[in-house]
Amino acid sequence: MSTTEVYIAPPIERSFEMVEKILTVSERYYTPRYVLNASGIEGEDLCILFHSNKICLVTLAPTHPIITEKKEVVKFNFEISKNVDRRQNKVSGKGKNGAQVLQPSSPLCFVECSDGSSYSICSCLNGKLIEFNEKMISDPNLIAQRPQAEGYIAIVLPNIVNSCKAKEQLMTKEDYEIARSIKVD
Image (cartoon, rainbow, N blue to C red; front, side, top):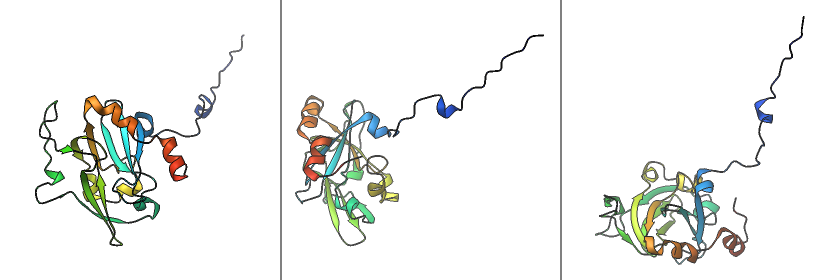
């Protein structure tokens, strides 16, 4: 009679190398660039997340007062003027026809906080407004809780010809960390 060896597999946790940090979708697929004092006011920094397909997400940088002061956001106002309401943006087709055209200083929205403070969030890019984040209306605090994920403000498509140039003109993560003396996770 022969004996049969039984193979006992190691626990699954030991079957692969553990990484210290699991990257988020935005960390894996987007390159962050930063704009200091985007609205012209000290500390109101924004982050632009560039995807390889040239789409950009506009969001708050970690040093923006809404995040650093843990402000409660109560309202987003997408009505920029009597003639411009970002919610009326209607985009169609491959060429993004009908999209509102943006300049770097074009306001995307105004953010109102429970302490009475308000902030103008600008696009920071030449391009077309593809959409604003509708989740901001029902859950405005996403902007502070998850700014680099569900809390983005808008999707902007920069001019394709100038997209790489626009990206290179903005601050890298390393330059931003040096300028603001912080470490961005």
